[in-house]
Length: 385
Image (cartoon, rainbow, N blue to C red; front, side, top):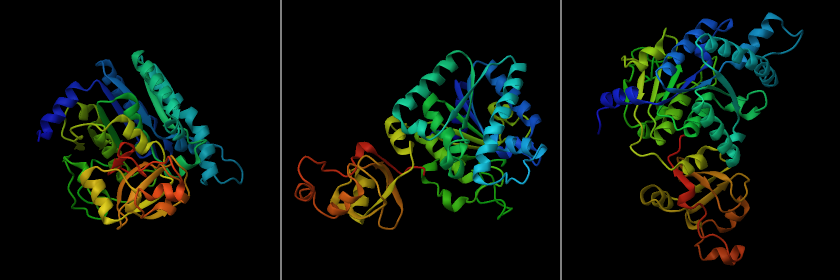
């Protein structure tokens, strides 16, 4: 196995395209958007850009900026913290957030572009490719794309999503070489520091695929919607694309500049040796699973150890209402996620053929149907969900 310190040094020296994600916990304080932090961040990104690197910024902060504006002139008798109010605040704050970035980067002689994305943009393959083409063109023009979720219209994303997940999806869009996640913590710790003050920072996570993220951390930050749990899931997705992740404190002054210079800070997360096919990555993460397929012990072993497709005989339970071609989660008999994939059968038909041999499909549903419920080419094992 390659020494992680040598790997880190090589990546930092040679990365041509860097994706930087910054969360609300870094960008905001009790008064709202912290413009000093915004300006220091843009100075550091501009410095990387001056060195010839492409930089893509995924940013939070629109809701906080909107609330800041509303608190200065509050709407009489209106709740500004409910879900509809969050969407409205995001629509107010996004223009203010982008204005501050635009002004700050302009002082450094940089041109920026705003990109607002939702999960819908990743569900549609055509829109996914359109977004890729737009970002590729902007980077060729030496423009700095600034990306955020379109919180003002995406109810599900605002309530349950986070920009860590968005950033991991953008990695595949732009073919990044490095993912830097700026957070309020000084790195990843062996246990939750708020519960165990003696917990030590991990300098490196070598095999994140084997890391028990649930046991290590849980919960969300008070300001953002993510927390370390979502950052580690994003790092796991990045690793599947063979992209290393550096999780570092954005609270420390000039942390990005120091980290990119190779200073010992944060946590370095090694990537997989080989990237999964981009199509499988897209299939696994383009949308949330619409249902669940539970399998018995034999089928679980065939999927995990032999790379087999999922057949009806191994299915013991079907949950949810979904149609043919839906994105589904596959679980073992203990409720542990094995993988995600695209089903060839609707839920109502699966319930008719589950536990049966493949030869029974024609008898029960008619001729000309698939022998596999989920083909291995349309399945990703051990997803970061």
